[in-house]
Amino acid sequence: NKIGVIFDLDGVIVDTAKYHFLAWKDLADHLGFEFTEAHNELLKGVSRVRSLEILLDIGNIELSEEKKQEYLVSKNDHYLEYIYKMGPEEILPGANELLNTLDALGIPYVLGSASKNAPLILKQVGLFNRFAGIVDGNSVSKAKPDPEVFLIGAQKLHLLPEQCVVFEDAIAGVEAANRAHMISVGIGDAKTLHEADFNFNSLTEIPDNFIEILMRKTAE
Ligand code: BG6
Ligand code: MG
Image 1 (cartoon, rainbow, N blue to C red):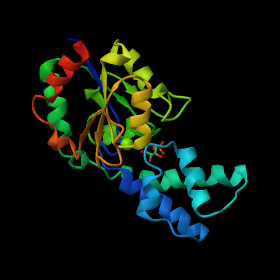
Image 2: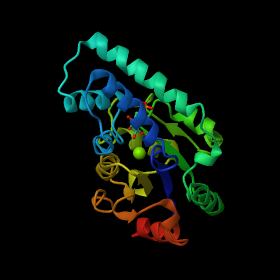
Image 3: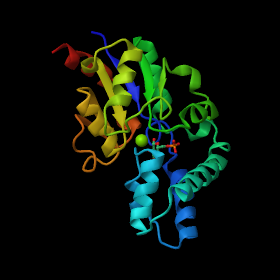
Image 4: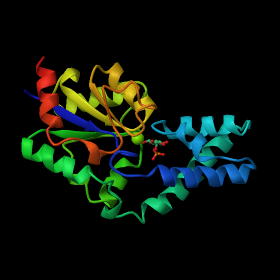
Protein backbone atom coordinates (compact mmCIF):
# COMPACT_ATOMS: atom_id res chain seq x y z
CA ASN A 1 0.00 0.00 0.00
CA LYS A 2 1.19 3.46 -0.92
CA ILE A 3 2.07 5.84 1.86
CA GLY A 4 4.26 8.92 2.20
CA VAL A 5 5.70 10.82 5.11
CA ILE A 6 5.72 14.52 5.93
CA PHE A 7 8.25 15.69 8.50
CA ASP A 8 8.10 18.80 10.61
CA LEU A 9 11.63 20.23 10.94
CA ASP A 10 12.14 22.17 14.18
CA GLY A 11 11.86 19.75 17.11
CA VAL A 12 11.59 16.62 14.96
CA ILE A 13 14.67 16.58 12.71
CA VAL A 14 16.72 19.22 14.58
CA ASP A 15 16.43 20.92 17.95
CA THR A 16 16.33 24.54 16.87
CA ALA A 17 13.76 25.48 19.55
CA LYS A 18 16.67 26.30 21.86
CA TYR A 19 18.00 28.87 19.35
CA HIS A 20 14.56 30.39 18.80
CA PHE A 21 14.32 30.66 22.61
CA LEU A 22 17.68 32.44 22.96
CA ALA A 23 16.84 34.91 20.21
CA TRP A 24 13.32 35.68 21.52
CA LYS A 25 14.60 35.93 25.09
CA ASP A 26 17.15 38.49 23.95
CA LEU A 27 14.32 40.59 22.51
CA ALA A 28 12.26 40.24 25.71
CA ASP A 29 15.31 41.32 27.75
CA HIS A 30 15.64 44.34 25.50
CA LEU A 31 11.95 45.17 25.99
CA GLY A 32 12.30 44.68 29.76
CA PHE A 33 10.29 41.57 30.67
CA GLU A 34 10.92 37.95 31.51
CA PHE A 35 10.55 35.25 28.88
CA THR A 36 10.79 31.66 30.15
CA GLU A 37 11.17 28.22 28.55
CA ALA A 38 7.52 27.60 29.42
CA HIS A 39 6.58 30.71 27.43
CA ASN A 40 8.67 29.36 24.57
CA GLU A 41 6.45 26.26 24.36
CA LEU A 42 3.68 28.54 23.08
CA LEU A 43 5.81 29.57 20.10
CA LYS A 44 6.51 26.04 18.85
CA GLY A 45 5.10 25.34 15.41
CA VAL A 46 3.82 28.90 15.20
CA SER A 47 4.88 31.34 12.44
CA ARG A 48 7.47 34.04 13.07
CA VAL A 49 4.92 36.88 12.95
CA ARG A 50 2.53 35.06 15.28
CA SER A 51 5.43 34.26 17.63
CA LEU A 52 6.18 37.97 18.02
CA GLU A 53 2.51 38.70 18.75
CA ILE A 54 2.45 36.02 21.47
CA LEU A 55 5.71 37.33 22.94
CA LEU A 56 4.39 40.90 23.05
CA ASP A 57 1.19 39.65 24.73
CA ILE A 58 3.29 37.97 27.41
CA GLY A 59 5.15 41.24 28.03
CA ASN A 60 1.92 43.25 27.78
CA ILE A 61 3.55 45.46 25.19
CA GLU A 62 2.05 47.24 22.20
CA LEU A 63 4.23 48.28 19.29
CA SER A 64 3.80 50.08 15.99
CA GLU A 65 3.84 47.98 12.81
CA GLU A 66 7.19 49.56 11.98
CA LYS A 67 8.76 48.53 15.28
CA LYS A 68 7.35 45.01 14.90
CA GLN A 69 8.95 44.67 11.46
CA GLU A 70 12.24 45.91 12.86
CA TYR A 71 12.18 43.34 15.70
CA LEU A 72 11.20 40.50 13.36
CA VAL A 73 14.31 41.23 11.32
CA SER A 74 16.65 41.63 14.30
CA LYS A 75 15.32 38.46 15.98
CA ASN A 76 15.87 36.47 12.80
CA ASP A 77 19.37 37.91 12.29
CA HIS A 78 20.23 36.83 15.81
CA TYR A 79 18.69 33.37 15.27
CA LEU A 80 20.68 32.93 12.05
CA GLU A 81 23.94 33.45 13.94
CA TYR A 82 23.18 30.15 15.71
CA ILE A 83 21.96 28.43 12.54
CA TYR A 84 25.18 29.21 10.64
CA LYS A 85 27.09 27.32 13.34
CA MET A 86 24.96 24.17 12.96
CA GLY A 87 26.28 20.97 11.44
CA PRO A 88 25.17 17.34 10.90
CA GLU A 89 25.89 16.55 14.58
CA GLU A 90 22.74 18.51 15.44
CA ILE A 91 20.42 16.10 13.65
CA LEU A 92 18.23 14.65 16.41
CA PRO A 93 18.81 11.01 17.45
CA GLY A 94 16.83 8.55 15.35
CA ALA A 95 16.22 10.92 12.42
CA ASN A 96 18.88 9.51 10.09
CA GLU A 97 17.84 5.96 10.98
CA LEU A 98 14.20 6.69 10.19
CA LEU A 99 15.09 8.27 6.84
CA ASN A 100 17.23 5.21 6.04
CA THR A 101 14.30 2.90 6.87
CA LEU A 102 11.99 4.90 4.60
CA ASP A 103 14.56 4.82 1.79
CA ALA A 104 14.89 1.05 2.18
CA LEU A 105 11.10 0.63 1.99
CA GLY A 106 10.85 3.01 -0.98
CA ILE A 107 8.55 5.36 0.93
CA PRO A 108 8.84 9.00 -0.21
CA TYR A 109 9.08 11.87 2.26
CA VAL A 110 8.85 15.65 2.16
CA LEU A 111 9.30 18.46 4.65
CA GLY A 112 6.33 20.40 6.05
CA SER A 113 7.67 23.25 8.18
CA ALA A 114 6.46 26.68 9.30
CA SER A 115 10.00 28.03 9.10
CA LYS A 116 11.22 30.36 6.39
CA ASN A 117 14.72 29.20 7.31
CA ALA A 118 13.98 25.52 6.63
CA PRO A 119 16.05 25.17 3.40
CA LEU A 120 19.05 26.82 5.07
CA ILE A 121 18.79 24.60 8.16
CA LEU A 122 18.54 21.44 6.02
CA LYS A 123 21.64 22.53 4.10
CA GLN A 124 23.53 23.22 7.33
CA VAL A 125 22.89 19.68 8.59
CA GLY A 126 23.42 18.07 5.18
CA LEU A 127 19.84 16.80 4.66
CA PHE A 128 18.65 19.21 1.95
CA ASN A 129 18.91 16.73 -0.90
CA ARG A 130 17.29 13.83 0.92
CA PHE A 131 13.74 15.16 0.79
CA ALA A 132 11.54 14.63 -2.27
CA GLY A 133 10.15 18.11 -1.70
CA ILE A 134 10.16 20.99 0.74
CA VAL A 135 7.13 22.93 1.94
CA ASP A 136 8.15 25.72 4.28
CA GLY A 137 7.13 29.11 5.66
CA ASN A 138 7.85 30.70 2.29
CA SER A 139 5.36 28.57 0.39
CA VAL A 140 2.27 28.71 2.62
CA SER A 141 -0.19 31.50 3.28
CA LYS A 142 -1.92 29.98 6.31
CA ALA A 143 0.14 28.88 9.30
CA LYS A 144 -0.36 25.69 11.35
CA PRO A 145 -2.84 24.68 12.82
CA ASP A 146 -4.23 25.35 9.34
CA PRO A 147 -3.65 22.15 7.31
CA GLU A 148 -2.36 24.01 4.21
CA VAL A 149 1.32 23.14 4.69
CA PHE A 150 0.58 19.42 4.88
CA LEU A 151 -1.96 19.43 2.03
CA ILE A 152 0.69 20.96 -0.25
CA GLY A 153 3.05 18.27 1.07
CA ALA A 154 0.58 15.55 0.00
CA GLN A 155 0.49 17.07 -3.50
CA LYS A 156 4.29 16.95 -3.66
CA LEU A 157 4.10 13.28 -2.66
CA HIS A 158 1.40 12.68 -5.30
CA LEU A 159 -0.68 11.04 -2.58
CA LEU A 160 -4.05 11.54 -0.96
CA PRO A 161 -4.07 13.12 2.52
CA GLU A 162 -5.27 9.77 3.95
CA GLN A 163 -2.06 8.16 2.65
CA CYS A 164 0.21 10.64 4.45
CA VAL A 165 1.87 10.25 7.83
CA VAL A 166 2.96 13.41 9.68
CA PHE A 167 5.69 13.56 12.33
CA GLU A 168 5.19 16.59 14.59
CA ASP A 169 6.40 17.94 17.95
CA ALA A 170 3.98 20.87 18.24
CA ILE A 171 0.33 20.98 19.32
CA ALA A 172 -0.44 23.27 16.37
CA GLY A 173 1.26 20.80 14.02
CA VAL A 174 -0.65 17.76 15.28
CA GLU A 175 -3.88 19.72 14.92
CA ALA A 176 -2.93 20.69 11.35
CA ALA A 177 -2.23 17.03 10.47
CA ASN A 178 -5.53 15.89 11.97
CA ARG A 179 -7.43 18.62 10.14
CA ALA A 180 -5.76 17.45 6.92
CA HIS A 181 -7.10 13.91 7.63
CA MET A 182 -3.58 12.50 7.81
CA ILE A 183 -2.09 10.05 10.31
CA SER A 184 -0.47 12.15 13.04
CA VAL A 185 2.55 10.98 15.01
CA GLY A 186 3.43 13.13 18.02
CA ILE A 187 7.11 13.30 18.93
CA GLY A 188 7.52 14.53 22.51
CA ASP A 189 5.37 14.61 25.61
CA ALA A 190 2.35 12.35 25.05
CA LYS A 191 0.15 14.42 27.37
CA THR A 192 0.89 17.63 25.47
CA LEU A 193 0.41 15.90 22.12
CA HIS A 194 -2.55 13.71 23.16
CA GLU A 195 -4.46 14.58 19.99
CA ALA A 196 -1.96 12.62 17.88
CA ASP A 197 -2.87 9.16 16.55
CA PHE A 198 0.46 7.81 17.84
CA ASN A 199 2.95 9.13 20.42
CA PHE A 200 6.66 8.64 20.95
CA ASN A 201 9.00 10.54 23.26
CA SER A 202 11.61 10.73 20.53
CA LEU A 203 12.31 9.27 17.10
CA THR A 204 14.58 6.65 18.73
CA GLU A 205 11.53 5.05 20.37
CA ILE A 206 9.79 4.24 17.11
CA PRO A 207 9.65 0.43 16.70
CA ASP A 208 11.31 -1.09 13.62
CA ASN A 209 7.99 -2.34 12.22
CA PHE A 210 6.11 0.93 12.82
CA ILE A 211 6.13 1.98 9.17
CA GLU A 212 4.81 -1.41 8.07
CA ILE A 213 2.04 -1.11 10.66
CA LEU A 214 1.11 2.27 9.17
CA MET A 215 1.05 0.82 5.67
CA ARG A 216 -1.47 -1.73 6.89
CA LYS A 217 -3.47 0.96 8.69
CA THR A 218 -3.87 3.05 5.53
CA ALA A 219 -5.09 -0.08 3.73
CA GLU A 220 -8.04 -0.45 6.14
C1 BG6 B 1 8.57 26.56 13.40
C2 BG6 B 1 9.03 26.70 14.82
O1 BG6 B 1 9.06 25.37 12.85
O2 BG6 B 1 9.00 27.65 12.62
C3 BG6 B 1 8.55 28.02 15.38
O3 BG6 B 1 8.54 25.64 15.60
C4 BG6 B 1 9.01 29.15 14.48
O4 BG6 B 1 9.03 28.18 16.69
C5 BG6 B 1 8.53 28.92 13.06
O5 BG6 B 1 8.51 30.40 14.96
C6 BG6 B 1 8.99 30.00 12.09
O6 BG6 B 1 10.37 29.91 11.94
P1 BG6 B 1 11.30 30.96 11.18
O7 BG6 B 1 12.61 30.24 11.03
O8 BG6 B 1 10.66 31.26 9.87
O9 BG6 B 1 11.39 32.17 12.04
MG1 MG C 1 8.21 21.62 15.29
